[in-house]
Amino acid sequence: MQSGGGEFDLLQYLGDEFTRQFPNVTFEYQKDSFDNLLINGPRLLASDNPPDVILLPQLADPAKDGLIHSLDGYFEQFGWDSFSESQLAQNRLSDEGVRGSGTLYGVGAGYSITGVMYNKELAEQIGFDSPPATLDEFEALLASAKDNGILPIITLNPATFAHQYIHNQYVDPAGTSDFIFQAPGATIDTPEAVAAAERFERWISEGYFNDDANSLDYGGFMSRFIDGEGLFMFNGSWAAATLDESMGGNAGFFLMPPLVEGNPPVAMGASLTIVIPLRASQPDEAAFFFDWIHTNQTARQIVADTTGTSPGGPTDLPVPDSEPGSLVGQMQEEAAYLAANGVVVDFLANATSGFLANALMPEVQRMIGSQTNPGDFVRALQEGYEASLDQ
Image (cartoon, rainbow, N blue to C red; front, side, top):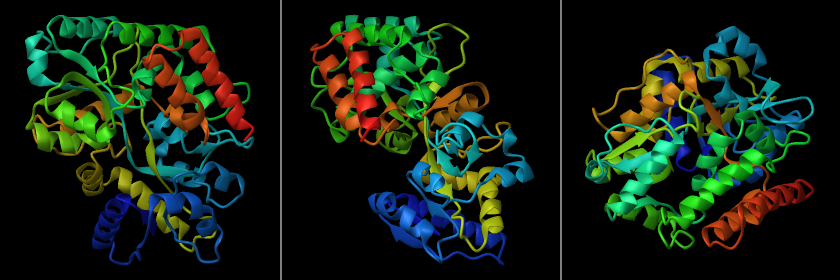
């Protein structure tokens, strides 16, 4: 089994537990860096003796090249139609090479979600005690925080989450996914995307973000939220364990509220994708291992304990155990709710290999710095996206 970075611990813990339950199956582990896997993954897949399971940061090109085993037969065999389809969609590829639909080539050894984290003590100061039902109600909380001398939202450079959190509530998730998955004719230049950018601009002009948003790195962003500098923070499940340890139960979480009350929640998330090489010697055993990760109670607990992410799987399974009142526990509950009742979309940053650096990041920085306007911002994103498709 090939893995990399911090994900290696998770897959080794899962492999060791699987062997404990099924002693006839053993694993040999090979560790590599995440960056090396991104570069060398296709070479490993194409080798004469590839690993039976490999963590694969990017599967579209290897799948197009016929290097990955289709999971469609196992989808039917194991009844994976009970899984959240929006979680699985990120690892599907059509015959035309478009992600989001078609053949299933991978699953997640955990699924991250994103949402709104908040400081409970600061929330009490403005009378906030339950998640807002709409984006307007959330914006009213931002105004109340500012009126009470509290920084409403602490964000970092680049503030791409702040933009996409709003964008997700205005734009049809299917359209967002088409854009990210490079569907023919996909565009972000729509009236709905401009309306989302207008709200983003309003939050900037109203002073709802920290003044140094264009220069704050992730470490400072986390430290300052932990120290109580801001009421809200936009972050993901990977941060939950750190905040539990540092804030002693003072951090809460809710999914970003919809534009219209009652609409399904929409949140960004991604899978820690694992695949089976086409030339794997034990594909059936590997597929059973994939199913076990999603459905076995102990395996699901390992995923939650090691990464803080959701184990995915059937949406009616109970969430893993956690400390009562912990942020990890809250996020597990919300992840299960999102899988059953909402939509998970990928990150806009993943649309193309160059989109983040060449379009999304600089344009969001320009918005934060009040150097552009919503219409020009959205047009620039589309132009940068089209340019990066040609690279």
